[in-house]
Every structure is written in C-alpha cells, then in structure tokens.
Amino acid sequence: MVGITSIKDKWTNMFFIVAYFVHVIIIFYDKKNRQQSRNVIGMTIWLIPIMTLLYNGMARLTHIGAETEDLFLALIYYGTSLLFIVIGNYLPKIKQNNTIGIRIVLTLQDEENWNATHSFSGRIWGTSGILCMLCTLHLIKTVSKEACIKAK
Image (cartoon, rainbow, N blue to C red; front, side, top):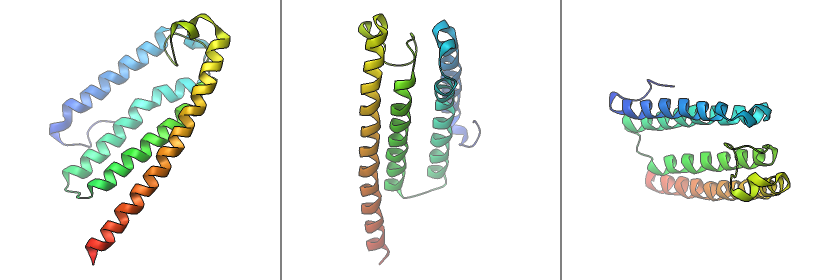
C-alpha cells in the first residue's frame, strides 16, 4: 500500500494509512455492525486501500512524466462511477446501524424507513454510476480522437 510513489508523497501515504486505521476502528466500534453482512464490512474495509493504490499508481505515472492528463481524468471518472455502482449495490443490503449507511434521525428510529431509504438511494447511486460511466466513455472517445488528430 505504501512505497510506490516518490519521497515527496510520503505524507499522503501516511494520511491514507491513518485514515484506514481510523476507518476500521470506527466500523468495529459499533456493536450493531457485528450483525452486518460480511460483504458490506469487506467492502468498507477494502475501500481505502484500493483508493490508495489507485492514487499511488496515478501519482507514480505523473512523476515519470506521463502527459495524457485527459486519460487520468477519464480513469478517475471511470473509477468513481464503478465506486458509485458498488455502493449502490450494497446500500439496500446494509442493516440498520450507527456507522454505515444513510444515518439521519428518521432512518435510525424506524427500521422500515431505513430499508426504504437505502433501497431507493441504492437505485439512485447505481443509476448515477452508470450515467457517469457513459459520460466517461464519451470522454475517452473524445480524448482518443484528439490524440489521433495530434498524431497526424
């Protein structure tokens, strides 16, 4: 997880490590999370390490002189859209708790409201992830056309 970026980015790596451990401690501190699905807990635990690797990989490519700035933006958009789809898939599966999910007073007081809110928001997140992915495909198509024009 650490060590593939330059020396300048050591503080960024330290931030991700500290954020990861704080994240895991918060998740396991809530006793209601012990009843959660293993898939939901696994997704929340792996979220920060995967984002760290993506950031470090992109930072490393930038440090070695990659010039395709638009391609990096497309990768960020595509990764974000995949993240939205994954979160949208898991939102309806989350059981009522105090740390993971949409935690407002109305959802925390009533389990039926919790389930309805997470079911609806899961569809919204999944749909927005698909829309972001379609927009990203358009961006990649535009970038590849510009690269072909510049190559001529």
